[in-house]
Length: 174
Image (tube, rainbow, N blue to C red; front, side, top):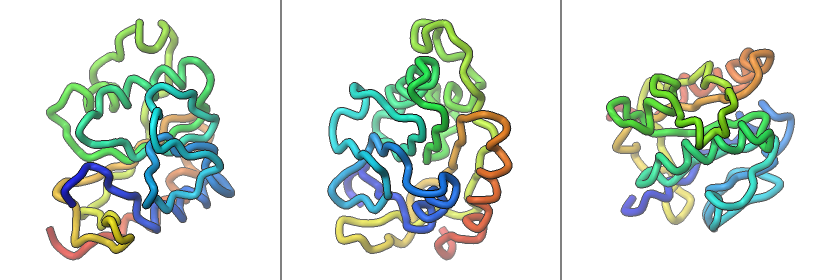
């Protein structure tokens, strides 16, 4: 795929619906090909418009830091109670370190408030098959993927239960 508009695969969408007992309140990173079921979807302006209580984001992978900071601001402001994010694994980058809590998010970004740690995370054992421009699964991404849940501790078990079937859902090989 030539762009960084990797559309979320159906098994992830179905697990999101199970986790939230229906569609997400918001997909701030949507596009015309997205199959994510959300009550509201932004195809532009997701970094500037307010997010909702239950937000799912599959951010453009070419500009990750602004999305990490936007998520932190929305949680700190109380706009977002639960955030599920599909990130590429990039453990040597600053945005990754901030996303996983290994590097602090600057106080001015989160308004000096504490925000939830991304626990638990679900790392896929093989590379996901994202959707191409025609809605078909591509052979496999060029990177490993992870789902983070930012939300209250009492919801962690449900997150793991809802997404547990995805541990075995992958493409063949790399």
